[in-house]
Amino acid sequence: MSSTLLEDLVTDPSDDLFALPGTRADADGRHALALIGAVDPALLDLVDLSLAGQDAVVIRAGFHFDEEDGGDEDEEGRDVGDDSSDLVRLVSHSSADGFDDDPVRLDVPMPFTCPTCSLREVLVAVAEDRASQDPGGTTVILLPAAIELAHLLPRLAEDLAGTGVRLAGAAHVLDATTALDELLEHRLLAAFPGDCRCTGAVHLANLGYADVVLALGRDEDPAGADLIEHLRPHDALLLPGLDAPLLETLTGLSHDAAASLSRIHPATTSAWGGPDDHGVWTLDLSAALPFHPGRLRALVVDLAGQGICARGCFWLPSRPGRVCTWEVAGGALSVGDAGTWADVPVAPADGA
Image (cartoon, rainbow, N blue to C red; front, side):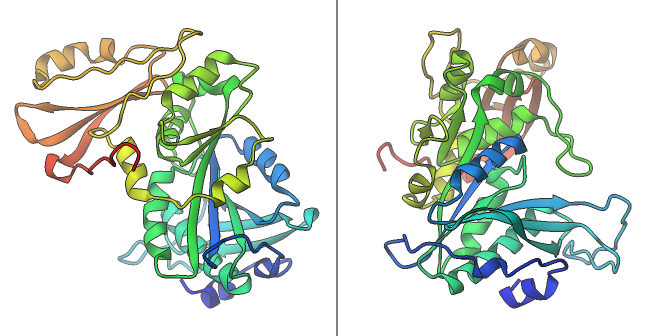
């Protein structure tokens, strides 16, 4: 989707979103695009306020669904119905001039029935427009709540390659005071119609994928803070609160999608570990032997356990060429298929 098409699709502009004053911070002259996600939208509100007045344009992205609309689709999944009101909504209160109570808003009809695919296409157009307006500037996107970074960023990075936009760091925000509940208990999400995910699954994926983890409330709940530490990759940066230099940290990074994907792939993930002063522990279990299918079925409930997060892989004698996946989050067990062993990504070397 070109920027011209994006502007043609705008249904409720209250101002020119792309002309907001920004920054000239990127050393290589390209426009920097940073992304921040969270499961709890209230945390994104706090981040929005904390970034006001800094050298960036901050845009809050969200979805608006008309659940009664049953528009038709073409062969590529594009919505071709005339009456669709499923929208990607872009709102900006914050710029380098401060926080504005009269926000700029753009509503863009979803070009696909897939919310994440639609968001990605809109973000590419927004980034290119912002780059043309402010080539050396910075745009921060606060993502819709519970977006999974691994489903959005790799393709976004591909689409931005060769443009005037540099994909900077991606952050995941969570609160230590709710981390135990949201990661270990089964808390259903409802981010879009038909969403049957739980908070733990999204947190687990985004903690492993993000370049930066922003953890709030660490002093109020040491056990929650320790749990976040155990699930944070060693090469992901931890920021301890809103007083930390979030914008500078994100713009100082360039997102490496391959490295991020290798951290969460079940065959290349690691047991990172962390402090154990408050009852949080990590075990790294490995064996070359396959699972016995019958014993796996009989013991699956016991293996899942309570109060556990787990990610890894196994193999079965009946499927020796396939990577079978094992994940426990939010009190739920997921067993699946991650392709062939030949397709397992190569984990980056330590220090690379």
